[in-house]
Image 1 (tube, rainbow, N blue to C red):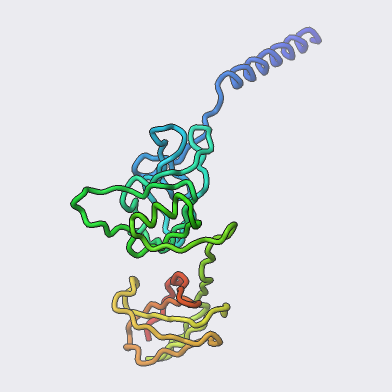
Image 2: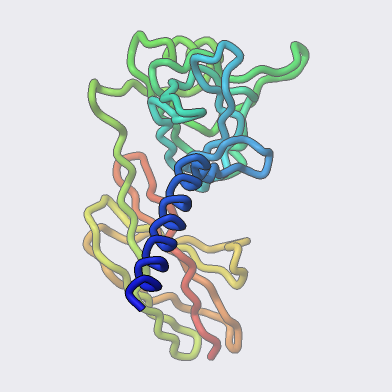
Length: 245
């Protein structure tokens, strides 16, 4: 009985050792996210290796942030590489609602287009760059809107708020929201969830509620809120439903 036990113990040890050797010989490959275009996807940004092999090119944007901070380096093929180029004239930033792009100093080329094409890329986007950097010169050369960054700083987005509650009584509704530090609140409401033909109302910074009048009976409405500080607005809040009455 003891001999059989020793035999099985020895057999188990051999199998375990063989398994470890196979595991060491066949490393597990880390999964790499790819965008719909087939490029490596990092925080919503599609990238590829530059032809020189020492930097990366930004090929496309798949996120939905109002403000995008492009990293100073991207990890690709086991290397930490700086971005130096944006491949196309827009890369999807505008169509995905981006309003501000912070670009690192190493990025010195912003897209290309046919010689006869009128350049309207990034017309609604403001770039944030360091004064005197390659990035600043690239933005200025293309005539895009830009602002300078202070050293070791990034532009801060305007803090938004959210609607806490909506109460409907006949053709009236009262909405309440979370108070935040800002100059004013802007509310919009519509019968369409996409806010088509929405009506807008402005409220002072100390307000936390609003009564909307003259709503149509037996009609559902949708409402959103955003804040304004200085000349900048926050993103619109999530859509809240105003029930039928």
